Amino acid sequence: MVTKIIDLDLKDPNIVPAIHVSKLDSGLRAFEFHLYDGDAIYQIPSNVSITIQGTKPDKNGFVYGCNYTQSTGVVIANCAEQMTTVVGDVVCQLVLVDTNNKRVASFVFILVVHKSATDSDTVYSESDLAYANEVLNNLQSVGAYADALNNLNAKVNRIQMTYISSEERINFNNPA
Image (cartoon, rainbow, N blue to C red; front, side, top):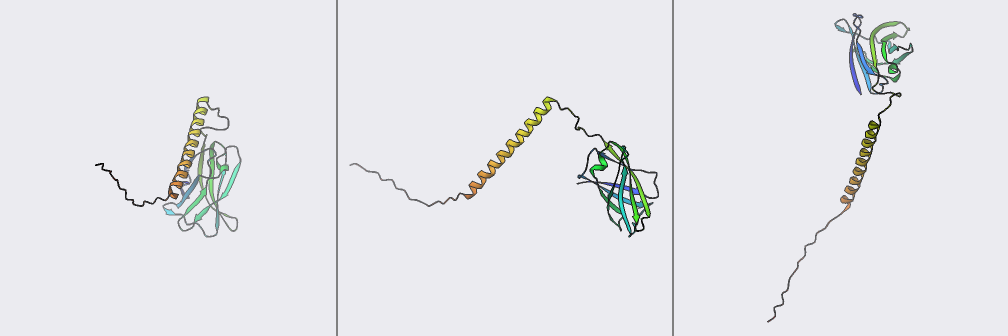
């Protein structure tokens, strides 16, 4: 998993960090937020839940729970597919809510979702398809050779060789 570390400061909300991701990134990314209250580590209250929330450019939103370590002010959020489905700037917040459903704090950042290099509308060149098929066939051949080599190695490991010394003599018939 790729982890991106982001510093967020409660006292300086005008500095809004941006996290760059590709469209449909998910499962491979995690965000590690280090929360600050000015120069000090933000002390996460003991009675809160933390969510990552955002609104995508298509006006659809998402909310996901986060894990956190209270003493270190570190919050971990996994990148979910819904966060990256729409290209553009996704305004996001870490929101801390206490047991009385009162918002205790929020930290703002931007998730910048970039267009993927290819998508479902991409038309691939014939030469690229041929090359891709060639690579795939070669990989399958390598796999077949590897299987054959493993089978041969297993057979060699089952062979037992025993050497028994022998004595051979040559008799010369000496005609007189």
